[in-house]
Length: 370
Ligand code: OSB
Ligand code: MG
Image 1 (cartoon, rainbow, N blue to C red):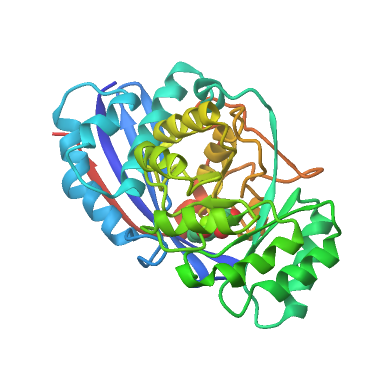
Image 2: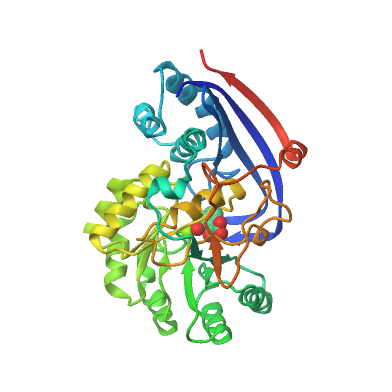
């Protein structure tokens, strides 16, 4: 396939309710979309980088810049390209996995649409429906939290994930477990908010039969996670720490990752995500698909990935309406009986609502291939 043109589109969407995590509160999403034109057709990718570098070092302005100034010129200088070549061609550049993943996704979408193949078939997914979990933020009061959780239970979600931080952990978990009963899946996500000396405190969560605790310690603290995993019963799951196949293998080997959250953006793309999935299947490590508050583009692709057999835990693939009043795709993801349908159309399986996208576009940059 010959790449001809790349359009970088920035769009802005308000969230239906503020989303607070241990690293900050989001009220709107500033998103970079990539639209690639090739000699065989077009494709779209969504960059999951956030406005500020608080989840990881990446942020959306930097992603747009590194793609325009470095990745696109290099990618188009090498002749014909397939999605499977993108990571190799961009390998000389350090870091920026979310920017790399978005570019690979756009090329992959174009390639699969041209071939009439859906992403989940291409990746090897075997299910047409996947269980849907919801990520619940931190609130000012426990009453607000319980009201939100009850709403998600009524919506039919298959499991609840609570964001936690010091001062908002044992008591919210105790009350939510009481509210949802002993059977429903419950897990927590600290987004690196604790330290090595917090093991005794975090052990108190063992009383609530959690599926896992996600990323309690800083990204680099693999040894700390291994020690914590040995000290508490709740399985330790890594998110931020897993940035590649190599880091996944090391963390598993060192006992730091009893479960892995796979986010395609964080690991540099859907193809690296599949390699991590395959490794985890081989090592008997359960995986699940994380989310980055994606629009319908990323949500459709994540659903395709999560259809792979190793994704044995419900992912953060909620209905689009959990975050957005209106999605940018014509058929937003919905949840029925706790499940999301894996999109079936060619490519990543979505169709865009172009008029709506035009209305929320804040800037457009067009780059031609040399
Ligand atoms: O740590 O999983 C996370 C959102 C933004 C950044 C990081 C995370 C999250 C979520 C929400 O927990 C996942 C989602 O539903 O999209
Ligand atoms: Mg997380």
